[in-house]
Image 1: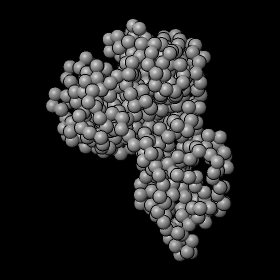
Image 2: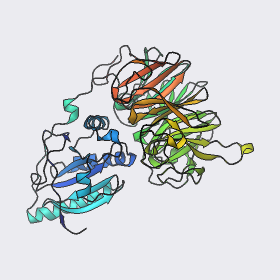
Image 3: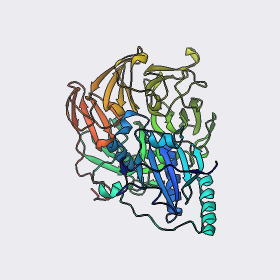
Image 4: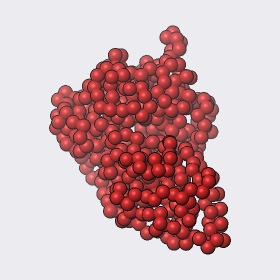
Length: 505
């Protein structure tokens, strides 16, 4: 890229994770990385650990600034971006670019995109996509050497006030992503606290699974570490809970009888390939598993990072791609030709899988392999079927508009959908694609009550047991309980549960 002076950053836009707006003029003498991102995008989330590594390695010479350019309407709200910063523990300043002004000035075309600005405020590199840590590391090192020789670098550590310092987490739950209701109790993926909470259906805490510190460590409940766990599946006969340990890129096996946690799939390194794969589970890298469902001795995985559905044979420990090419779109057809867009929720009626395909804001049906039924297919049940297409409309089939739906649950011939960015719960017919809003008035908030006279904040997961539905109300840091006979919503209280850094129950 030829030397182009970097356009100055707007000072009148909202800024987060900093006391005041930052300007390139003030940062002259430092290397600056602009990370163009949006918080729904799995590829953008994959870039964050790379940026954190570089920030820490070059903290006195490098400034990272996130430029949040929203993909969905819900992501334009500054408070929602603040919550995402807290959820993903982002420790660099973030500029809210809701009007795409900065995006256009820098001629950005895709999420994520990295712009590198040298100490003399020239743009020296543009990198689209993820997986560029080594390239960036080498470039930064060369820039430091060049500008030290020229005397144009000014090493100094930038002191900023983070959102987590202004808003320390004291909630018993932090951004719970998924919930699973079973005959043995309630399992909550306390994603922001990197643990699983097991309680009775009434909220009495039975077990805390994981220390509450991020990491990857097997062992007893009090020793194990998770990293932002999400979806779960339960084997009632053997008392085994399976967990999608999302940011560790592994699947964990929780033995309730022995009270141990064991890694059973994944290598702990993010897979960079989308080609169809098959291999031993512990030797096969995977990419941000987000949700799970168990059918007989098979575990089906919504693999958000590679835009695919995967299957694990729990008897043979063979892990393989089940559906999806790995491209990102919403295309129906055979298992091998179909294309998904960040599948983030999965459920089943034992004959089909049902998938919340978040970036296409659609609900997909995926056939299971039964020889007498012929080759299974992938079909769109409801939603626009367009990548990044969204809205909020009830109706049938492609008339339906959802906004970044993350959760789906099959029960009694219907699908319950967490329409996450519309802050609603909707009911869908899996056969004809009818969709109607059942809970939530569409406004962000925390309000108990009946039917549409209720409010949620980015609900991401749901689970039904008997006549109760439990909802992971993510940005409210709460689990909501729905009496399905009355359609009455209450907020579940967990007796004695504390945040890991506050107390131990």
